[in-house]
Length: 80
Length: 368
Image (cartoon, chains in turn orange, brown):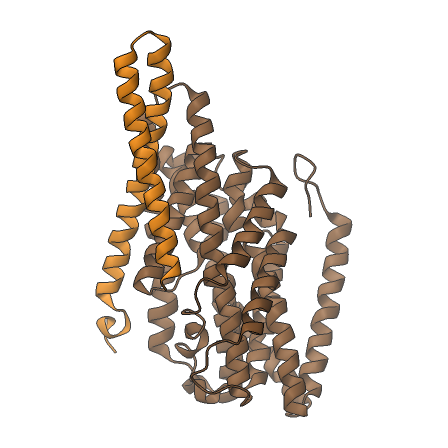
């Protein structure tokens, strides 16, 4: 009985890699959404509408990315 | 008649295990949400219950693999399943009593392995399955969750650490409601299926269903209901441990821990790697603490939790073996399971009545 016969190494490596990409990626994207929202408010208050608009756009894009990741998560669950 | 009575006892015991599973694992889903103030306790638990119920209907792919990969299906009888469930329930209640978040899945597997060994010897255990499907995932999953949560919180602090704390905290609290919901859904999908698998196994062993049959609708509905009711009952002792005793958590750490947990659970679901949600969430919580500052983790509490993880399989196996031996004292009929079930219910009633006399409320007036 070898380790390779007990564990499907490829599945294990794929699980670990996917966990890293999804976990770190989603947290980073959602952090970008929060950063965008917080910067939008601050920049707007300090009278810099262009920079505020850029921060808001980034925040919205990141929020959409997070929503897409959550949707993918639900699809993964429903297709197993 | 005798075998039908045993089957009814097995089904009721399996649903009782499912209830303790929900009750015991509520903390996995809601502890970080409650401890960071992302949602009020009853709201978080109510939402988790509903999503656990819904999650149970999403898929039945795990149901067949619960015991088949670990124990030789040819030796399984309803009495073995019954004794295994008694081992799992007993261990779940012991760890709830001391407030330790141990794995209900490992308790179930341990219980069934112990009762099968007591019935048919060590040849009944599929060693490759036990190592590959249980032990290695038990090492890998919490480690990955720990590292992912640790890296995530580092990135979060770098990205938003200089922003005003108010909007950042609010943002992560909203995020926690979503990540907590995803975890609850994944928990219902994973854990309710284990009970469905056990009931289906007993129905097959009794000859009620064919060997390759899927769980009938009444099994799916009853398992979903039992885990949702258990979740709604809330195991507050374990919620306290996971939510406040491992680390003092802020909203960003709560989100990182839940995000890491959801990512690991969904990735393993996708690639067909079974794991314990308890191990993953607690690994994530420890990682989110260590990622901020290693000394932020109360390593004594973390050590106790890991010790409980190590003890779960052998302890549940031991209780399962003793339960099987006790049923066999009274022969192969229904009398043994009936007496063991009644004794277990009596012991649980005594434990709960003592517990309710000693109950200390959580801050905010929630206790149990």
